[in-house]
Amino acid sequence: MNEKFNRDFLKILLVIVTPILLLVLLFSFYLFDRLMEDKKKFLLEKTYSMASMISSVAAFDEKYSINLDFDNLASNATIFQVQKTFSSIIQVDLELEYLLGVRDGEYIRFLAHSKEEVLDVEMKNLNIAIPMRNALEQKSGVSIENSYLGKKVLASYTPIKGTNWGLVVEQPYSVHIKPLYQTSIMSAFAIASFVTFLYFILKRYEVKKTRLIEQSEKRFQQLVESSDDFVWEIDAQATYTYVSPQSKKIIDFEPSEILGKKPFDFMDEEESARVSKEFFELASRREKIVNLEHTLLHRDGHKVHILTRGSPFLDDRGGLLGYRGIDRDITLMKIKLQEIEYLAFYDALTGLANRQNINEKISQEINYAKRNNTLSALLFVDLDDFKIINDTQGHDHGDEVLKSVANRLLESIRSFDTAGRIGGDEFVVLVRGEDVEQDNFAHFDALIERILKEINEPIIVKEYKHQVRASIGVAIIPRDGDRLEDVLKCADRAMYEAKKMGKNRVVFHKS
Image (cartoon, rainbow, N blue to C red; front, side):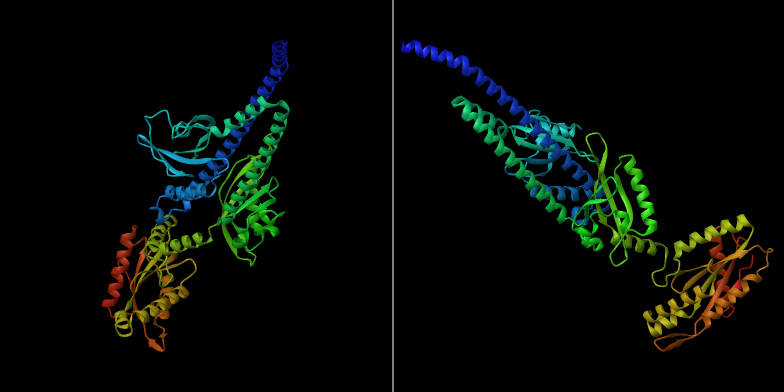
């Protein structure tokens, strides 16, 4: 009887419990599959987010961030920042590993990594580093593959836009299979306890997931706030919904003062109209903001030059929700570029046009005179005995005299004439002509005499009075030449003729 009871009990157990256990197991597998999909989505979102950040950093570094510290290679600067970012966002609980790689000949070389040093992988060893191979073949996705160590991992991979790099975010597969084993074991002991256990597991998973998300957000917030750039988010109407603390450093406004306003509220009227028009045109096409240069008004009123990059974010139906991006203060860079541009066209001592600048203007004047049948003049001005001033008073003293002569030249000529210094104590003045009879140069005489008279006025430097004299040679454009070299040569010859005749006089070149 006991034996029969045992058999009946087993039958009942098999009939009743087995289907329930199977259902529980099926439900467990279903649940595991759903959790796996969430994991895949989670990894994929992380990968795309990180890839977008790396691509943006690489684009910025390519144009603005080359530094001697990185051998003048923007890629080295980017890799340095990526390695720094990877090191700061290691997620121990999830055992995530971030890898940035590139194909280098017959090897896969890992440029940046979030854990221990990673050795290069041979391309011919096809059974390992499969996620990175997919990324370097311009594939994106998430799957269970063998890692660079030959271990099974759940990995998300994607290529980095604008580079030949690949990004992989991977996690040991054992991390995912473990909950299923635990659930199966608990199901074998008791369905009731299994349900309770499952509830607490899910609850615990949700709490852990929430905590990890909060920690992740905190880490990224710390990264954002440690940047020198101004990070922002705006809605579809361009109203600020997030502003990083760098706004205080860049334009001296606290984030709380900016939230609820628009970027255009911090621009002058003309700039606001230009930038808002460009922004809403981009927004209408859901396009990225790429290197948009504009100016913001600092609290004290001065303009701050800004370079803006941003990307749209959309709802599930493709509707525009807003933009997220960064503003970089490029004021110092703009000032340096202006200084470089100034030095390329103007004399550093006097502020007059330099040789390159004046040569271009002479060539333009030759074409103008020929096209409009006018006569212009090129004056070659050489100070007489200037070497004596340098030898007796010193070069600093002589420089002050040269600056005074330059100022007097500017005061003597008209706004559309040009004065330049081509070296030492040699100056040139380009005088725009008038529509006159050929060989009638009387209209130049008054201007030239005024220049010579101004130069002859005493110049006082450190209570020392200098009586400066100058010899001036004049070439007529285009009579004395229709090429730059010919006109300069004629004016130079006329100047030397003036020196031979006793200096401090004006001589026109004789054709």
